[in-house]
Length: 356
Image (cartoon, rainbow, N blue to C red; front, top):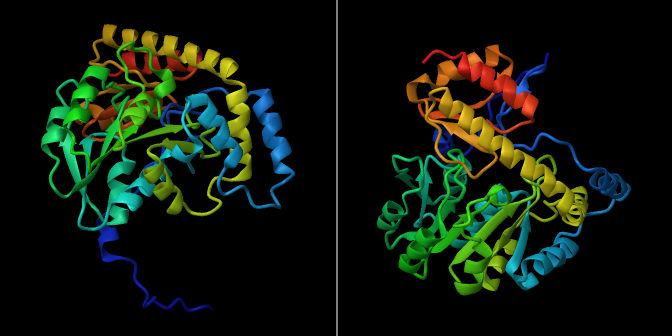
């Protein structure tokens, strides 16, 4: 019998207080609407590119993702030196903090917002400053501005906000950026950019052309349907982009991911037809929930937010009983991804039968 001896090597003590990232649950036989994935699988052309790339997995990937970087630079109209590729935008969130912050610095973000922000901030060692949302479940940019101190080095602005779906519009973002000190980096997290329809929505890339203290994050995980391959990108000043690349884990964006992202750029028109369908379903689902008596804030993402407060846990269990998996933030609300029309109908039936 092998005797297991306690280790004398202990992890950082502060990690005991750090909550783990909670992914959306997958339950056999249930409809998964918990992870903001798109419901359709890869296009045939993308699947073909992945299969061909698989024949080269005995080689290291291009750690600089040169071909993908060149394609994105041409698409966005920015120099290649202003782009950094990462293992999903969440990895780039951590790299941006690593590139700008020490344990003496602060990171400001709205709350509730993307749940990785406090985790990656804590891991790097910086101090997190959470700013409550407005009563409309939107980022409170005025309060976030007021929360900036001489110790602040980075501010996350998630738009559309995850998990509430609310949008920061161009005029309010312009006012915010004009007031933020020039030594504070504003990270505009646009993971759901392709789902936005509001004509007053900003395009973060325009701001990168105008300012040195803004970085924009986008991803291939959502609209492009590559959540399982993990590839995203950051557009920023050449200095910030170079620093983000410097702290990147070598070879973290694998060969399959790079090939799939390039193929997806080639197939944008076909992919965005799917995105258009999701936008239509988003409106239908929200309208039906409101008609059923739910408070559902505006959403410009591929999900809806139900601010259920103390009823969230019960709603989550009710949905599970109806074979629907949603993402419950107990005590706050439930985020529900827009699926296929058939999946959405099953969710709506479950929601309408929930007694509040």
